[in-house]
Image 1 (cartoon, one colour):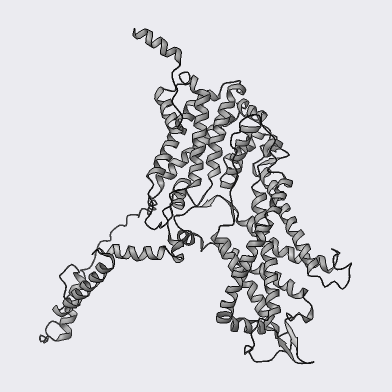
Image 2: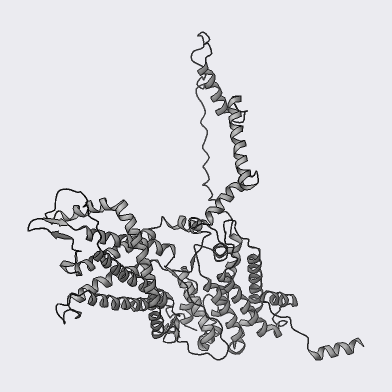
Length: 634
C-alpha cells in the first residue's frame, strides 16, 4: 500500500526504457553485420586500414548500418500488437492504402536500398565496370548505364520488399502468455539475452535462404519492369542530375547495348543478398527481442516503482492497446511467479479508486466481457451520425402577388405537330413519370427479348439453371480458386478473428492473460489473502467466465463459412487458444472453490453451467453416500 503523497509513475516510464534496451540490442546486431560487410568490401591495399574501425572501413560500416537501421526506425514508428482484423485481404487494403504509414514504408525501403547501392558502388574498384561515368578519352565522358540499371534494380527491390512488408504485416508483434505451471516455480531463462541470441543465430540459415529467394524474385521483376517501363525515364533523369557536374553529350538517346553484363549481374545478385540479409535479420531480431517478458533482472517491470500496484493499474487502464497488453502480461506473471507482489495486491485496500484487487478484478472482467460486445457488434451497420437540428426559420409574409407561370405566347396560331416535337414529348413524359409503360417500339422489344432469351440459353448450357445469380457466382468461384482471387477470399479464420477480437487490431494474449490472471490470483488467495476480500468476487468471476465461454463456444459452432472461402477450412487457432484459457480458468476455480460453492452463494445451477462450459466432469457420489441411500430406501 502506497501513501497518498507518493507520486505514481506511469507504466510507460518502465516499459519504454525496456523497449529502448531491446532496440539497442537489435541495432548492435546490425552494426556487427555492417562491419563484416565493410571489411569484405575493402580493397585491401593496406592490411591495417582494411579492418581498422577508425578509417574508411568504419565510415563504410556506418553508412551500411544506417541503411539497415532505417528499417528499425520504421518498425519503432509502426509496430502494433496483434492482428490487423478484417474479413479479407482486399478489405485490409481498402482500410490502409490511404494511410501515411503505407507511403512511409515504401519511401523508407526504397531510400534504404538506394543508400546501400551507392555505398556498394563507391566501394567497387574503378575497373569493375560499375562506375557512374566512364572516360572514352581525355574529354569524352559517358554516363554508364550499368550503374543506372544497378541502382534502379535496388529501387525496385526496395518497393517490392515494402509491399511484401505491408502484405505480411511485418509490424505485427504477438505477445506471450503466462500459462499456469504445475509444481514449484522455476526460473525462466527463455527471455534472457543470451538465450535469445542463440535462438537468433539459429535462424540465420532460414534468413539466408529467404534472402536468396527474394533476390531471385526481385531480379525477375527488374528484368521485366526496367526495359519495358523505366529505362528511358531513368536514363533521362540520370543525365539531368549528372550534366551539371560532367561534360556529357547533349543527346538523351538510350544506348543500344544491354545494360547488364555477366559481372554486373553477379554484383547485383551479391549486393541484393547482402542487403536482404540486413533487412530480414533486423526484422527478425526486432520481433524476437521486443516481445520478451515484461521483467527486468527476473522481477516485474513495476517492482522498481515507488507505487508498484499504482503503476501496474495505470498500465492496465491505458488507452493504447500495446501498453494494456504488456501490463496484463505482467499481471499474469505476477499471479503465477511472484508471491510478494500477489500479497501486495491483496493487502492494498486504501486506494482512492478502491482496493487494488477490486480494480484488477473489474479490469479483467471488463476485458473478458468485451468479447461478448465484439461478437454482438459483428456484422451490424455503424450507427448513423445524427444530423444537427435545423433552427426554425420564420416564414416571411408575402407583400406582392406571386409571379405568373403562364406561357408567354398565347395568342399565336397553333403549331403543326412534327416528329421532333413528338419525341420531345415522349422523353419528357418518361422523365417526369418513370413508372409509365415502356415507349419502345415493337421491333425494339423483340430485339431485347431475343437477347435475354439467348443469354438464358447460354447460362443454362453452362450451369444447368436459369438463375442469373448462380451464373455470376460460378464465374466468381472460378476466379477465387486461382491466385488472382486470394485477396478477395473471406476465409473462416480471418472472419471469426475479426468478429471475436474486434478491430482495427486484435491481440489474443490480452484475453488469455486476463483469464489466467483471474484464475491464479483467486486460487492463491486461499492461502495469501488474509483479509478475505477476494472471496466476495468469486461468484461474479465464475458466472462471468461461464457466460463468456458458453457464448463464445456457441458463436464459434454457429459461425458459417462464407461462399468465397473456397478452401473451407474451419479452424482458428486464435479463438481456440482463448477458449482453452477460459476453460482452464473455470476448471481451476471449480476445483479450488467447488467445495465452498454454497458459502460463496453459488447455486447448483451455477456450478452445473460452469462445469458444462469448462467441459469439467460431473462429481461422482461417494461410496458412503450410496450405502446410506440404499439403507434409507430399505
